[in-house]
Image (cartoon, rainbow, N blue to C red):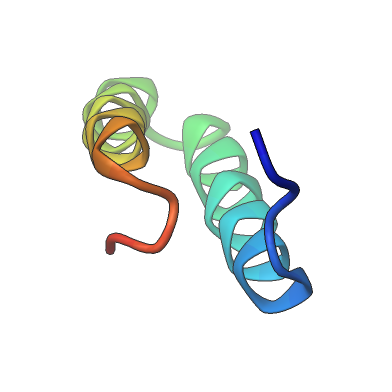
Length: 48
């Protein structure tokens, strides 16, 4: 598996940090967003 391009990697990191921050306030919504993020990531990291 090839490493992610820096732009994609930074975007994914920001998305995960946003989900983590949301989990502090709304765990259920964060779980739904994480599920959606993981589903998109399985389709390909450039998706979403």
